[in-house]
Image (cartoon, rainbow, N blue to C red; front, side, top):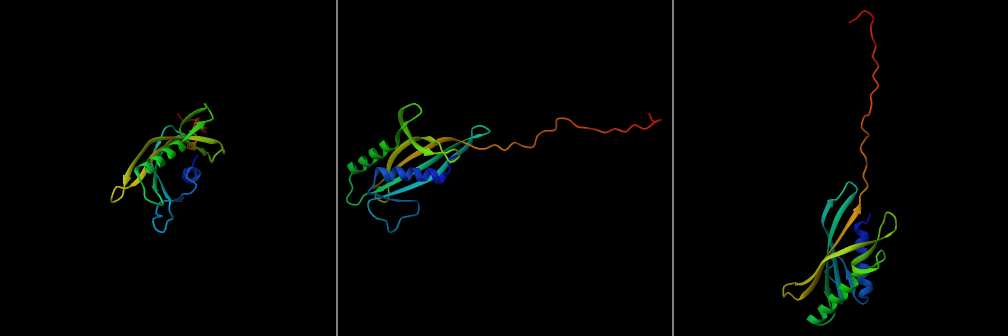
Length: 166
């Protein structure tokens, strides 16, 4: 099973490797930050039972980039393209490059490939001048099923018959 801490750490590790000069901040860190800065937020948007042992999970990721100097649309698009390329990896199972990230599964320490979907960018802020990139991480996770108490299959009944009765 992949927990949220492992998932967020993996996203932040990708950001650190891709943008080594940037400072990575989480949700709520909005004062006293150093430039260039990347703000990374994660929130679960959906969780459904797919089967008795499998749960479907969706996490929305928001990445906001704040450069150290004057910004331009070209800088923003370069940041987006670089991040988009970093969110693609070669899936070792079928040797295809696709939109996914490689995450370590906490249950058996194996690598899992988590799908990246709905990658988009836009602008936020009072002047609509701060780029934000959003995407969804989508995967199925194993949920251990605790079997209920076993059903009664047979019952032993002791019957005592009295003599002379009907």
